[in-house]
Length: 111
Image 1: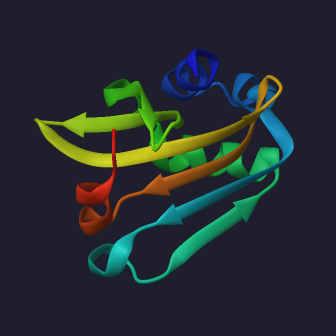
Image 2 (image 1 turned 120 degrees about the vertical axis):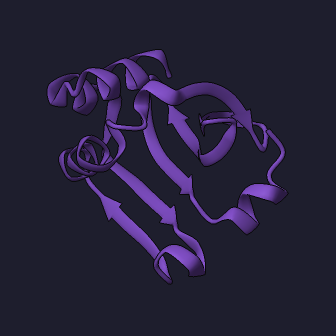
């Protein structure tokens, strides 16, 4: 988690790819208010590009957390929970990432 967050904060593509499984799957639930439907992206380079393009501005606000019993991170900006990401870690690499942006879903999570 520390290596993932550090690479995200620094915008370090190579470091980010190195902590991702080559077949990592990233899923995002944006909810009906942001953009209907879920997003799914796979592959370390593709996921790293999305994380750096969209997530880097929020990375300074990310803090490690346990989400539904799994490794994760929460992003709180101005005392408001903005997103939660749950990681599936296999060995020493991130094999899955589930990002939740939907306010309704955020209210139901155990963090």
